Image (tube, rainbow over all chains, first blue to last red; front, side, top):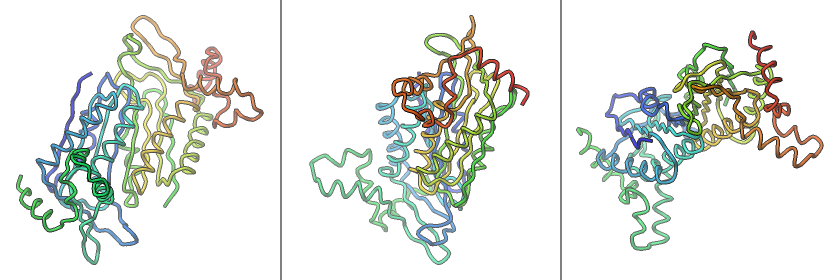
Length: 187
Length: 187
């Protein structure tokens, strides 16, 4: 089996072409393809959402995505992985993140797909702003915070390396995030 | 949230149009879509597979698929479910079964998708023949057999009703299966 990953962080204005990623992982050697799409939904905690906006420090996000693909391959027998994340505004109903995993047997693909989206949410430096009809707010990712709190509670030397991107705990430092994202917006 | 399922068993010659099912489950109310595709792979136990052939007793298979959708909804908070299964020959690389599940939160969709394909394989009366370069064989579905063996070991009255389709244990009675499938081929 090959060991290939396709990782793409899409600049503003580029929609996620899910068929492209499904085609990428498809293979005569694979009997199973599991996918996950994260889409913008219209409500959050009772408030009407207009769109989500994503920003990222692309080089680090790409490295982190590569690391979680490697981690998935160490745990499951996977053929190909595709991960795509859109930046900029993502209107209601559209896809912001897409993961596709092919495998010989379905258990590997399904479990790896779940692992990949959970790890992406918890460790990859991509930040989300929710835009409501009456304002906007950087969304604190509770999974980031849990990971950070876990680190704070158990300050073992080197423990931050358990996530592929230790610096991801910067999620709450809003202004700093914005600066990083802006610096990267032309990449 | 609505409570809608789309269940389709596709007659011979009709490919699975996965975008149709993804579009069906997509909704502004859903933040997550999990999918699973089962595809024909080129090798099984070291033998080159040319194609798989599927036959079904369609009315019962449809009822069973509806039952497992109901079971999934009782366990997870799901928006929409689509399940499609192709009959007849399915060449290497093509999709025989596709499941799409949308949900507000990703955990529900991912877990329900895994449950649905596991239950489909274990309980829905759709039979598979593997066609090799040098012959063909009805594939005994090990998940069927485990379920049946479980029933045989624990002959509790009514226990066969744990699966949505108790009659599914007929998987090994090949001639009978063929007759059922042939009877149904014009449906």
